[in-house]
Image 1 (cartoon, one colour):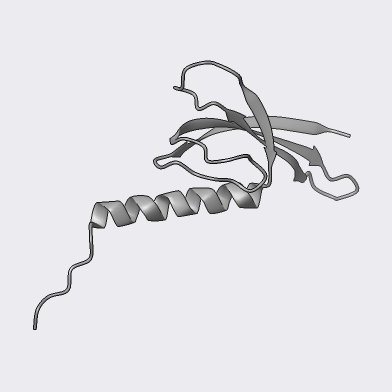
Image 2 (cartoon, rainbow, N blue to C red; image 1 turned 180 degrees about the horizontal axis):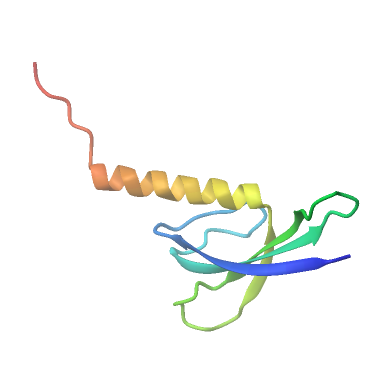
Length: 100
């Protein structure tokens, strides 16, 4: 089976939680490693994701104990979306109601 691996970096502006991890992880930039395997028997080349690993601590964090956490891609996407929403809300500031 043909497997390919690629890395990407994700940045969280706020502390976050991902299902399957213990506790809250601090804000920062994290390395994510994605493994995909080739789907055989098709008339074209296609791959499916088989593993997503989040490496801790964050890239700029002091080096200590490092871990590779197996996570679901959908959980990572949800955490990133929540972080972006928190960032947008903090930029907008508290909502104000105009007096009529």
